Length: 155
Image 1 (cartoon, helix red, strand yellow):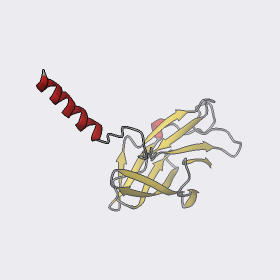
Image 2 (cartoon, one colour):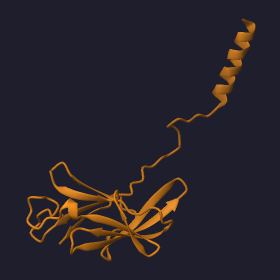
Image 3 (cartoon, rainbow, N blue to C red):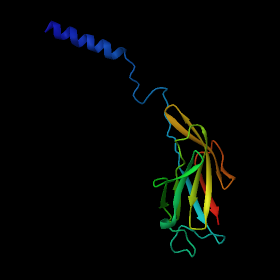
């Protein structure tokens, strides 16, 4: 019994001297989002991703390409069509994160005649990836440091 008490006391001393800091204290964590949310509208303000809008973009026609080593590589999982709580359809796009600390280029084929270019300043660091500035067809649409990358394109 005396040996058991000594072992328990030793375990108590060891565990009380450790700083486990499980989710508390001064340690901080951050959620880093990489996605871009894009709303498409015509000049009348109608949602071009809504199938009820004349001239809408169809998901069957959409394709995503990442530029890698000067070549456009088609990817099947670089975007998602979805809707917000008001039923407004939008496109969620993820940039190429395989390129380390440089501006990446994504080509978005919306239809047979409509291909757009999205460039993102992607910085890969130890343990996380950050997206800074975002350009849509050469126009800066999101600046580094903005909390969300949500923008509307009028076609």
